[in-house]
Length: 155
Image (cartoon, helix red, strand yellow):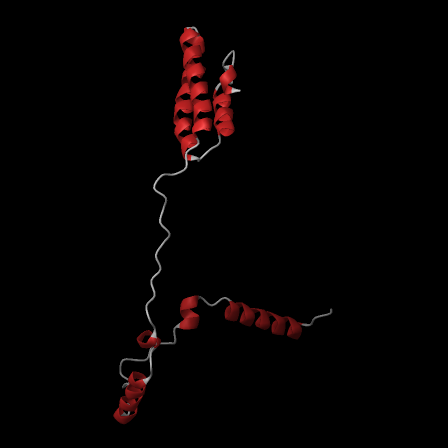
């Protein structure tokens, strides 16, 4: 036998000690045991506490010597840039979708009408520059997956 009964006892005692020492909760480790209510609080020399408070009040503070500086944010431009040529391309796609929705029979109108609703909302995003005309047309084409044809203005 490599480890005798004495070695096992020492090993288990070490394991128990390390487990207990490592696994203390935060409350046990940070909070010292409370004093009994019968013990009197320690006496403090009043001359020491008065001189300590005077030293603290005499120390200079950074807030007294610091100067306040203000910065003004840059002014926003009055009009955001608009992409009128791209918006016109998307508007022509929307009008082509409206024409296809009018021509299509009842079962085929659904994809065109949903793509038309998306297209109209994308015109504003293209005008504001939030999306590109190519990205808007790509989104419209994705709406037209069930449609029989895709209008040429949307390609």
